[in-house]
Figure (cartoon, rainbow, N blue to C red):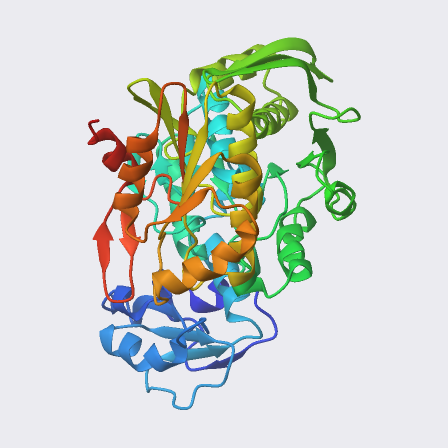
Length: 490
């Protein structure tokens, strides 16, 4: 593809060098630039996008990209030097230009797929898995992109980030098409929306789960966080559907932001899709759905009020795209668990739950759901991540104090911070509640909770979920909450 065709959507622009140089690969990391070559009389090779990052600046790596064989460099600031024989393009917004170029380079794959995007503070992963399960039950071949894994047809890989960077994302969507997929269910993070990774993706449906305090270390404040989430719904066209949680305080704001057809879901009265007579046990939930597509029973092996919301979101998105309710029923019933999301592990005469809950609202949800079905005490093990929003730390402890009978405050991923200092800040949220201990070593904390558990108790280990690592200032080690539990013997 010629460079001028690749960046045709990025106007105005200033081009130094040959605008018709042939581009055969895209990169935003200079280490991934492919060596250049000749295409007839013209050079061909990689177009390198020099992005301004949170820590580093891609402009610094332009010489390295050129050294490795880049034939064009795109940036939104004027380059100090322009290497001979290399086209340099200055655009108003390099990230937006990269998203548009990646879409064009890979043939606009999202317009040939039905892409369902799920955003919100909590519930993205489970809702995405549920949507995928329904689509699979309908006989469709699907792609799944999110926090836990990327699956393209029958091929699965470990996820490097919740929502891939624009070039990687468009490449994956193209691979989905090539592998015969018709639908893709993907998580859409607020970081991805702010950094324009999904700028050129056409979504057939977008789901909003909720908005509670998280990621303020990145967004700064809740209004900015909210604005990032709204970008997904502002991008929808009138042929798409917006599936919005009617029980969320943000419902009206999200609904007003989009041109798409709005379908609401919720447990409280007033939603388009709701549920009645919901019964909960540790083995799941069952209730009767009322919807524009009729009334039907819905059951899931996954329990908790928050999982009812997740299931209703998935059902609404799937049926809104034309799938029949009986397929939605089968898909929800078929999904027994999501890794690290209310993942139950039999531990003798008590139960252990491993969950990714790492925000005040998520802890509130998981612990209140366990409280509704537990026969004995709730023992919570939790910590707070380092180098992340410090304001939520005492709020997380307060949520634990409201719902747990006992707790162990421990370390999560401390990153560059001192674990004890993180725990000091979280501890303030306990107030006068004193039914907790501090054990900084996470493995020791988990083992202590398991040793304390009695018949009928539920041990909730929150914060890391599916993660199999722990990040410290000077190292990252292998660590899995689930493996610690499975290796424990009383």
